[in-house]
Amino acid sequence: MSNSGRAKVNVPKLVLDYITPSMNQYGLCFVDGFLGPKTGDRILQEVVALHRSGSFEDGELASQRIGTDQPHTAPAGPCKKTIRGDKIMWVQGNEPGCASIGQLLQRMDKLIMHADGNLGHYTIRGRHKACRQDCGIAQL
Image (cartoon, rainbow, N blue to C red; front, side, top):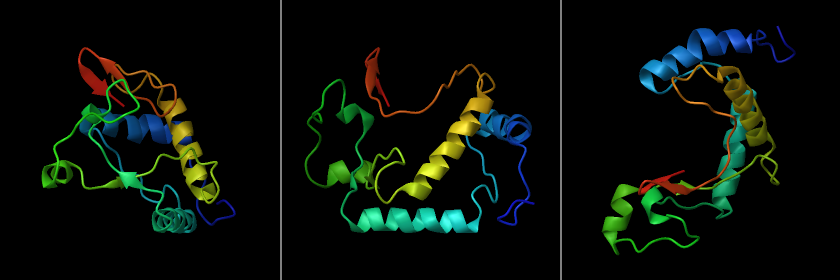
């Protein structure tokens, strides 16, 4: 058991035996207790504080930002909001008020490192904010 009362997790084994098979078969994976309740609660508090500060922006379709810093013209009125009605904020985890979010991102980075070469034919080296256009399709 670690100091937090949780058993130490063998990350490479978790990734190879559970996470990558689930990701390859279903495209998602749930890991109960991944963060533990204390860290999960701190992340929630940070996200709520960021949301209350007004730092979140309207989510956009990837096709609204193709190769420019300006959104492409989107339908006016309610049509624009019917596809994406969420609010988003990009964080790296080192911003003020994001320490626990940073811990989550570090843990995710560790999982990604251990999954390298095991997620189908994808090679994932890390995460970053990016938008590019390939063959007329915008990718984030």
